[in-house]
Amino acid sequence: MINDISTDRFSNSNLTQSQGAFRALSDPTRRGILMLLSEQDMTIGDVSEHFDITRAAVKKHLNILEEGALISVHISGRERINKLEPLGLKSAVDWLNYFNQFWDEKLSALQQAVENELKNQKEGK
Amino acid sequence: MINDISTDRFSNSNLTQSQGAFRALSDPTRRGILMLLSEQDMTIGDVSEHFDITRAAVKKHLNILEEGALISVHISGRERINKLEPLGLKSAVDWLNYFNQFWDEKLSALQQAVENELKNQKEGK
DNA sequence: ACGAAATGAAACCAAAAGGTATTATATAGA
DNA sequence: TCTATATAATACCTTTTGGTTTCATTTCGT
Image (cartoon, rainbow over all chains, first blue to last red; front, side, top):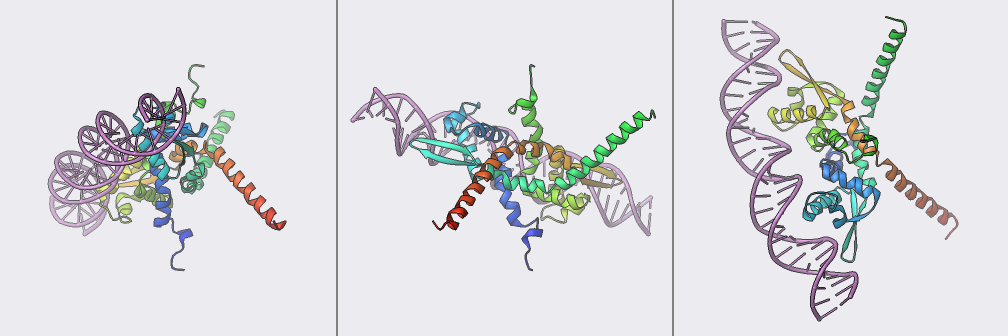
């Protein structure tokens, strides 16, 4: 097998697949927009009212969110309805889930330490 | 209760807490470094051998990862050992997990659609 | 003690990011 | 058909980012 993607975590495909999502998530305003859209679909104008930046700036953020496939846009007349696409977060979540194993190890160790501490206290040491 | 953090998803505390992690994760080189460090602790020199950029550039990435609490640094003589801190990913993962509910809804709907399709096929429609 | 090795730090650079203001276009409604 | 509304598009500006090069500092090994 020349190119086994499943074991090649450093392959371009993997790195670039989640890039759009991670890029979009790196800005706090964009994460705020995702939160907003999780409650209801909104036009650019609607979204803009929640931030102290111009509509044009919000539009740019929405463009980046769309590029990252985190939202979709549906045109209705002169309005542009922005809709959350939660599945777009999958690539980022999948990437992060790789680290669950190490996270669990750490938590287990921490829990063990706490339990030992409690046990020692009980024994009056 | 004047300030209930648990329900205030837009609070500064929540937005800025994960900001360091999300910022660190936005660069593909940094994500590659995290992958590397998940296999073993490494010095700057070790890490640098895996990328086509200078040691100085790698150092900057490591600084950002450290600021985001995604790695820790342990000095040993003239060497600087970089170690993965998987718990540092928690704030980002927690933030993303909020969206699980919507993700699940989408997947359920998709699954239902597929099942209905299969059922229709069976019935020869 | 000395040279090589590992890193730190600063100055510098080009491109990307986040923002603004301005102008243009399309459409809803009276 | 006119006008106000919703958005698109462009030019422009400043700061941040990702990178380099150069030079200084610390430490290992002989």
